[in-house]
Image 1 (cartoon, rainbow, N blue to C red):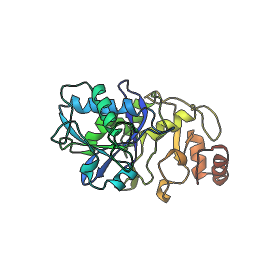
Image 2 (cartoon, one colour; image 1 turned 180 degrees about the horizontal axis):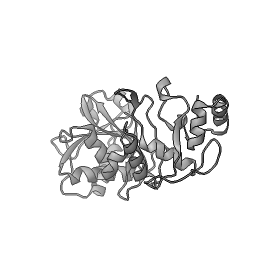
Image 3 (tube, one colour; image 1 turned 90 degrees about the vertical axis):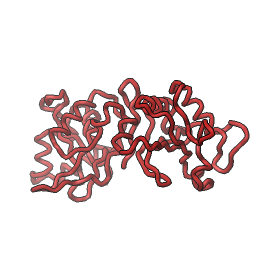
Image 4 (cartoon, rainbow, N blue to C red; image 1 turned 90 degrees about the horizontal axis):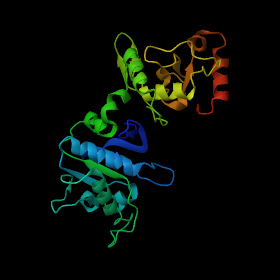
Length: 281
């Protein structure tokens, strides 16, 4: 599963990545660490996650350090567990999310990658793994990370639903999504590939509403208020292409038909590679 950006209280993406994963036989949510230029909104994201877990009535969670060096040097998951009670859980009841976030970050500071220290002097924004038996599905964890917008970021094979989801997130300030390197395909009478609405929205926003081939404005806006440009996979999904920003361009309908059917389609593709620096072969 690809990473997600945590959605904050204001409905916008935080620059803090998370991923739903299985670790040590448990299913949960990994919040990536804050370091240098990576994930600068870690603290706010952790507060949001704690708040959403509390808001559905969960009173205690398991929290483990999950960076590769720590996991290598502390192979027993219980030796890298962060807790605030003798029962080994991190309890959430009776405190505000920000105070719980501060406590959890402070407990991280006792760990270096090789030892447990007697004073809290280390990094307090490490890679952590959160788990509770009360959250049983990936969709439930997605809602913890993305809030009420979680459905709008899910991939879909339904073209109309994809347009609707793109419209719902188009006005957001979107960070570059990871996309899906091997999109799920559904076989009915034809093979249909699942598409990521955040990739579509990101590419159309990046184009500023102009075709990336002919550079003319989109001919109209669709019923969701999004400039009508068709997001084309330069390496087709059917040939193993990825549903990622590095393989997508926004094209007007005319240029999109031309790239598929005209005698100059190879020249159009070559020109897209030349003038669109994000594309990778």
